[in-house]
Length: 311
Ligand SMILES: [Zn+2]
Image (cartoon, rainbow, N blue to C red):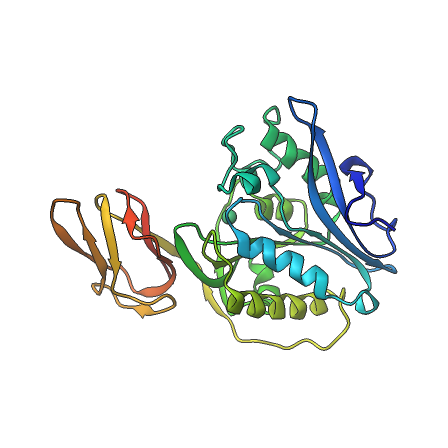
């Protein structure tokens, strides 16, 4: 039985060797100064059954994902589990410590490193070690993210249409992405691991209403995987296959005219961008669809997203 101050080398991570509920530091590799890069890991293991991994903190400012994954670990009663649940709330500790999306140690996005051919830089080495020793051993992976300067209405994203019904057990809005390169969801799916990405709220914040809603959905999903005992609650779904990111035409301040989650028609005014010491311009929607991402930070640079419209 490992406790929260104990550690384990990621290369020694074997499912079926744990009993009950344990949390510890997962050691990865030594950085330039000889200190080891480690991350928090929680495991609930009981009898033979499915293996599910819930991940947060691939990006260091996406705290809803970190908070949700550690909270669900604390809440789950080990007596109701059959199989293995692995929870990794801070996948990129370098970025989390720095309170930035990626770490300035190499400025590489961890969520673009899986099954990549490059693994010399620290973030690439971390991605390779985690994929080889943890994710590749899973049946299911759920990767929880958050917006940055904008807020996401809680929704799921999948790269495989077969995951739509599973994802609908977690959240009612589902986006089917075409190709997501070396992301965890795409890479895991390519290895036959059933994978879902969640986008919840905005960066540098915790939205407790979204947290509760997502944890409720995740428990429902865990019942469907047969990891958690209990009856499944079937839910409605709204599936989108297209997404348009509307960028600001110039740098300035953005004022929204729409609500997050609202359905807008083509030609409606999304908001106004006001240039510093300059003009004001209304931004019109080029399409009809639902706003699942809305900028919350007022300052905007040319080309940065003000909304993402799904349809
Ligand atoms: Zn993210």
